[in-house]
Amino acid sequence: MSSTSQDRPAAELSYEQAREELMRVVQRLESGGAPLDESLALWERGEELATVCQRWLDGAKAKIDAARTPASEG
Image 1 (tube, rainbow, N blue to C red):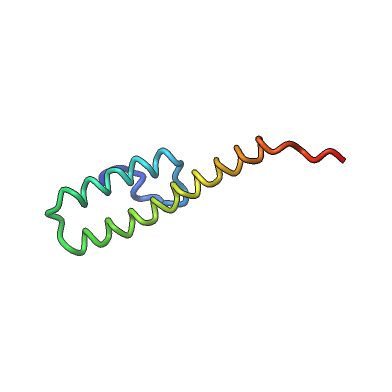
Image 2: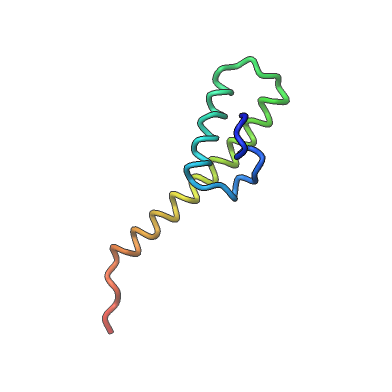
């Protein structure tokens, strides 16, 4: 994780930034060999990034659902 996005709070990242960093975190964890303390830190960061990505996706879905719902005629 040498990206500058890792230094920023996860909540400040765009979806793309969070997804890219999450992919790097997963790759690092899957490669193995990291000391336990680093693995735990990576896991925690991954959880934060996954939450951010899910919030972005939920927001996009809500906007699509709102656009599909016809306005009430009254």
